[in-house]
Image (tube, rainbow, N blue to C red; front, side, top):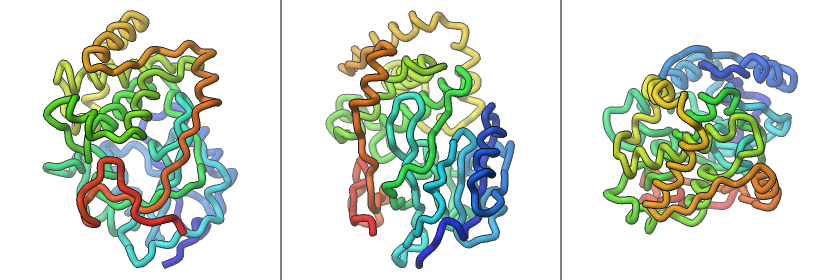
Length: 312
């Protein structure tokens, strides 16, 4: 079935993001229809379920509160190709490290999918406890329609870096026995994204906290083994982690965690601000396109969401 983004409900999801009100105003200024807002719902499953309930259209679009939407979102046509459970994902540009990927991106959901499946805090077991894309089938689109501006405060930067690094260090949403096994199964593209999180972004505000969050996540999951992957979906866990570490000497903590990464044979030097700026200009990671499926419904589960079709 063919869907037009201009005909679908827009749901703006906010929880504790300092820039939420300003970003909502940006959305209001360019949206063809008045967006709805779901605020303060704790838990990823609960928040997205609330978004589905707020929508009056069979499909709807979610915008995270730390996203600055571009007008390119509107006027796009989406074809679910007789697969009504598809989630459409537009790539977002990361404001700290320049990556262009699905992290924090605008997505188009079938309403029934979020009403009748369980992920994150509502999932009892399995990779779906960690993130949506380990549970649903995604059709990734080529057009960048938002900027993921998550680093409003040191805490929000740290939280985002920690969550994403944990997810990137998993294989099909699951933690393997050892990091050496993980590296052998990880695609070059996925490892590249992780290394960027661990090294790049020193040229923007609060950037070092995002890098520390990513470095600490790898240390906590793979060396100290104090964090279970599913915990990155828990706000209370991440908040407690921040309270424990936010008074640390940032420079020393970055160096210490660089040393720990070295124990795993991960080379991730902290790039100086001018080098970081240059890197983001020179490094191009084109958005992935087509059908990507971690669920195994289209055959063996791929590590990096094997591309099954070309985008129409």
